[in-house]
Structure formats: structure tokens, C-alpha cells
Image (tube, rainbow, N blue to C red; front, top):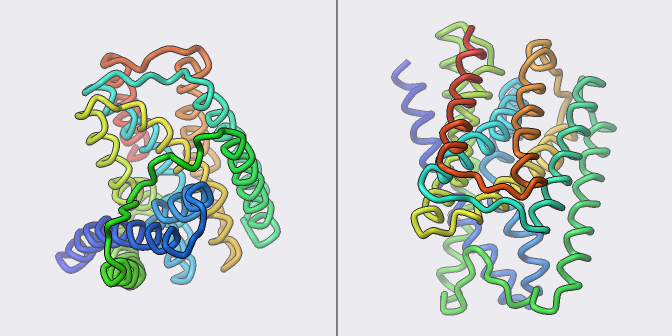
Length: 312
């Protein structure tokens, strides 16, 4: 028991650190190779910031623990909306109604509906995975075309970009990230499976709770930091981008590696909880309403209610 808990804790910490190193190293390496910042932002940053979730889900599928892979993605999406937006909103108001947020939100809603449909047609196999990846490709192309239309797109700041970072440090960051992420995923999945067996709970529940919150920690830390700087609005973009990639990219890749049976409990409750959490943002984004402190506490209370329902 102690060994499993320690493996989970070390795995979570290593995921956060290795993920950050990989993003910083890969972003700066891509820019040094002459890849336009627009392309880097849409690909390297998007994939890099979701690398912890991706590696955990891939490891879970290879270890024949698909419940953790599915639970990780569904649970992360719920935690992203209710916690990663709720906690920063308590600190600083989130302005959710700009035109870019509305378009991105509709993309996230479409991705959520597609994922729910694919799940009900499950188990998720390679044909379903290709459909999800095609959806991701369509979203990336749309984002590229939209960003290309803006004259200042190339001047936007990129997460992790540092023109003064020496090449040797870029190499070290990239290598450490590439080594650390698989190791962290291995520790986290093995520990989570061990805990599930000890307490006789399903791997899906562990994925929905412990693993999901753990892999959402980077997004939560980023959003809280932004809120403390009175820049909480960036949390909305982080959550939407992460949720879309989780559903289309991570499950798409994991589905190519092996079948993902969808548990009945997920079809009966968890998927609908994710859809309700997604729809809960509609009045704010589409109605151009701010997420105030009151609504921040409401979102957090919603996550607590989800956990209570999950364990009963």
C-alpha cells in the first residue's frame, strides 16, 4: 500500500516537472529550427501541455488497464471545467464571452458530443480512433486558418518560449522531458492499479478521480497563477484547448494501440456528467456573462457533488 501511494505521488510530481521541461525544450527547439511560431503554438504547445494525460493513457492501454485511460480523460475534462475554472474564478473574475472563446467553446461541445457518440458505439477500436483523430485534424486546420488570417498571429507569446535559452539547455530540457514523462506515467499507472486492487474499486473510478486530478494539476497551477496576476481569462482558453485534445487526440491515439471497452458505469453516469459540465459553461460563454466568485464556488461545489455521486 505504501509503495503504491509513493509511486503515485512521485509519478504526479515527475509528470508536472517533466511535462514542463518537454514543453520548454520542444518549443524553443522548434523555433530555432525555423518553424513558424503559429505552427509551434498549434502543435508543439498543444501536444506538449497534454503530454502527461497522453503518456498515462497510452501506458494504461499497453498495461491492459483501459479503465484508467478512459477515466483519466473524462475525469480530467470534468476537473478542468469545475476546478480549473472554478478555483481561479474565486480569486479573480473570468471574462468568458469574447468571440474567440465562443467559437472555441462550440468546438469543445462538438468534440464532447462526438466522443459520447463514439463511446456508445464502443468498445473504442481503431476505426473509432481514426474518426476522433480526423476531428482533431479538422480542428487544428481550422485554428491554423483562423490564426493565419490575423496579421499579428506570428507575434503572439508562446508558452515556454525563451530566445535567450542556450542550445545545450534546450537539449537537456527536451531529453529530460522525453525520459521523465514515460517514467512518470509508468509509476502513476502502476501505483493507481495497485491502489484500485487494494481497495477493491474499479480502475475507472481511480482514473476518474486520483489520476484525472493529478494530470490536471499543470492546468490548475497555470490558471491559479494567472488569476493571482488578474489574468484569469487565460484559464478559459487553457481548459477548452486541453479538453478538446483529451477527447480527440489522447483517446484517438490510445484507441490505435488497443481496444478500449467502455464500462457500463461510464455510459450511465460519467459521460453525462462530463456533458453537463460542458453545457454549464454555455450561459457564460454564449451569453457573454462573467464567471464571478459566486459562480466559481458553484463550479467547485459541482465537482464535490460529482465525487460524492461517484463514490455512492
